[in-house]
Length: 295
Figure 1 (spheres, rainbow, N blue to C red):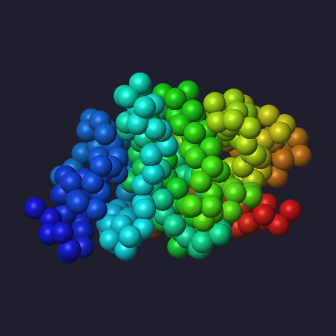
Figure 2: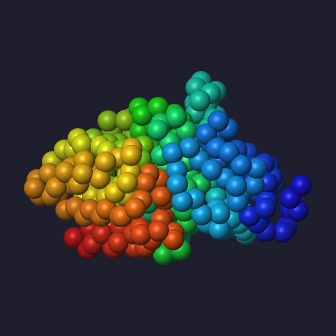
């Protein structure tokens, strides 16, 4: 069993992370709740369905950071539904927000992992982004939602509502917030940007100041969509880069600020892209978001 005080390492068993006392009540949500979608016994061996270029060092840094922050007295996980709501709909038990706190009073982002709306690949597709954003000073949340396109969007709308309702407690600036996502998570971010939280039960809330999307072949958009940044690999067999480029080109023609990048030699699900041709893309995405803040 993992010692309660020693850091997690590449050789730490995934089950020991899930059962760590610091993560009591929500450790199971760090990894897919359906074990069918991941493999490996240790953090080094972790593999997620649909994902590539998983960096074990990033995985280890994420779980150690969360545990250290919890040990420091920080709240690192928030329920977005009440006990009564979860009792009425047990599927909502496996939802919530992991909080990667940045500078108090700074703006916030919500990161949404993909997983084909069948599971949540957070350890590759939202936790790394949230950690990186928090290290840049922003307050970042990683949403754990329950499967299904509609339910996922409802969970995201509820998460936005939760953050707005608890902004003082969370110490976040709600102006010009951003929604991030990869694959299915990118569709969630785009749909909330297109239709607003109200369309998914979140009430009348401001739309995001920027949407940051990775590798999803969505083509629909509205002329009221927020400014949008997108990136993808040119060997992605799930999300065609030309479909993504065409969507952003049409949005640009409609007067929406956009930025698009395609990276050579990369397939689906590269996350932060550490060690690949996409490495550093998140800096461009943050700069795009910061440009919107100045408008």
